[in-house]
Each structure stands twice: as structure tokens, then as C-alpha cells.
Amino acid sequence: MKPTRRQVLGAGIAAALGGAVPSGASVVPRKPAFGTGTITSQLKLSIAGYSFRKYLPSGNNKSTMTLFDLCDLAAIWRVDAVEPTGYYFPVRTKEYFHSLKAKAFNLGL
Image (cartoon, rainbow, N blue to C red):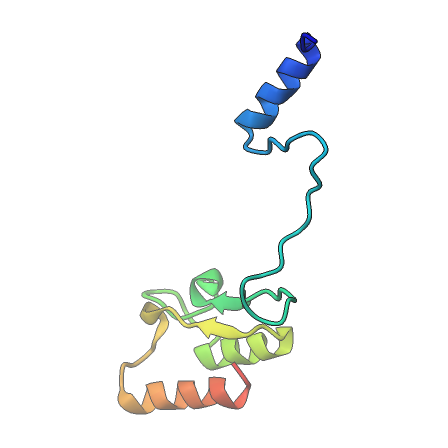
């Protein structure tokens, strides 16, 4: 029996898309190779300091917000982390970095 034009075209498209499944075959989702069989996302949400560049101190830009405020905002919004972006640090001292890390840690970031 000669295949119809529609069958040939359908098989060609399926092969091109990498989804060619032989006739009569069933497609069963595979079980993950790891874990308990449930798939959970490993992605976490964070806030980047650069997204708040209008409000953070930089150059001639007057600050209406600090990186500590950014941490508070992240906690209110219930995101997982803050990316403070180095050029918004008002000072670069060990004490400042420790206090910012402690703030983030205490907020669960």
C-alpha cells in the first residue's frame, strides 16, 4: 500500500521536529533519574540592586534607599536572595560587608 501525501508530509514534519513516534507506540512520561519521582523547581527568585539603580546611591545620584532597605524589600516580597551589585556599596569595609550579610541572613535571604 502506497502512503498518501498527507502521511508522508506528517512523517516528515514529525521527523524534523524530533518527535517521530512509530504507529501504535505509546508515549509514557519517564520517571526522573534521581530523587523520589517528584520534580520540583530548583530556581529561586532574587532582587538585583541594578533594578533599583534610580533609588540606590551611585555617582551623583542621591540615595533614597540603602542596600539594607533592599534586603527589607526582598523579605517583604518573600524572594530568596538579594544581589547587591558592588557599585552601590557606600563603603568597602569588612564591617559593612559583615553587617549587610548579617541583615540578609537574619531576614532569611
